[in-house]
Length: 249
Image (cartoon, rainbow, N blue to C red; front, top):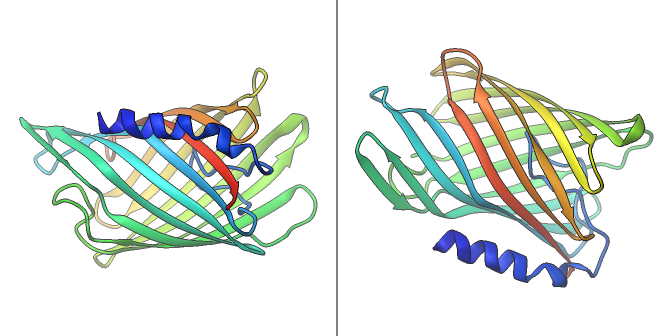
């Protein structure tokens, strides 16, 4: 029910978004856009919900639904503030079910001006340990990532996302190339590969892709699915999302 309310709110606010040029959204796919919102610009990117399935501590598969929310606020120039969290999560598996809220985060994105077909952005984030037990990380996490982007002929794009997460003294490295192509009308598709080195679990990898559909000029709906390649790590990641730009408030 809460997920339906969030989706209804986002869809109901779509007309408000037609008051400024649309931004590049960070959803979906690995990494984030290599641009920032203009000063005073506000956007909401909402999972409705996203889903993961992975082995639990005892080896039994465990799934989680997450209604992730990301608020983006343009600070002017190359800077953007991001506030994230998930008010609703549902964890299930091994005969147990748990509902609660996830950790919250604050991040700063820097996207310097570039020329030509290349662009990049850097994002630093702190995720606080304030989620419901077994749903949050269990400790504060620090993240530093970058996305490098190249615009290709025929409105295609190639990006590379590199990221470091530090949690409880352990580092997790991620490298993810993404190839995006236009399909029909306002619909885009992409292919993605996530190469992950977890300081505790070892090497992991996922592969898959997704779709992003522009809704008018100021909003976007998306869907994606990734599957594990290899014996370790998350088995599945999938989700639906909607992103809305409200203009300069």
